[in-house]
Length: 101
Image 1 (tube, rainbow, N blue to C red):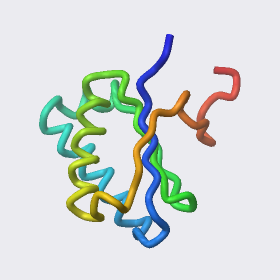
Image 2: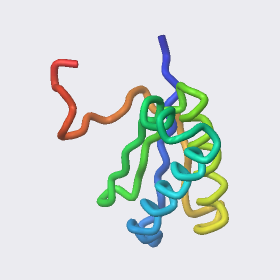
Image 3: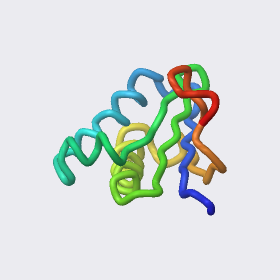
């Protein structure tokens, strides 16, 4: 089964800390829509400051809303040409994830 995963890649000129803040602001906005508990259960996203990239799992309604709101915020803050969005095959592994999963 294919998952709906969105990968955002920003130009190097976009400050990494502002990209991350924009992502977290989108998550907070979605908490207002769905509640903190549902976001904790259904949201999956990660940010890589070195690559100026983030990935959002949009396989749930919560993830879709995070992706939509983040896209809108990013367009307003950085401009339409400052980033690209593509579909990814899978979420990247993080240091805290179980390598056997």
